[in-house]
Length: 116
Image (tube, rainbow, N blue to C red; front, side):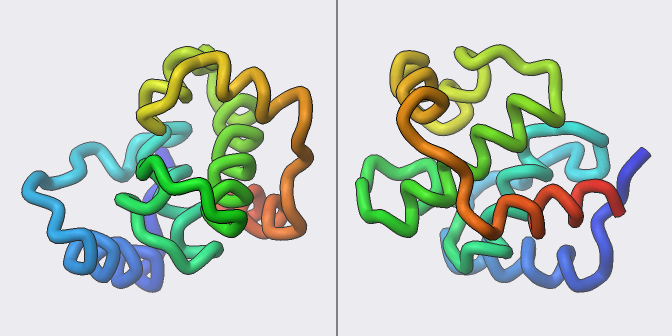
């Protein structure tokens, strides 16, 4: 089982406070969950969870979503449709990410955080 470090817990609390999330993210300690991957991507890219899932198409948000997709598809056994649903996107957008874009340099940093 994989647990978040103290630094990551503080980051999650900041994310939830900034996004005014009305619900509690459950099962953050479950290994390979999309929520843990999303939070770590947000921490590395300096964005909120709401921005990761938003419809905005800014380049820094797109890079974070691409990194999230690559990690989620390689690190979990989730289907592209499940990953797209988590990001509030259509599955064809996720397929486009895979064909047209490569992960950013932060990809290896995030991937390393997941192995801790």
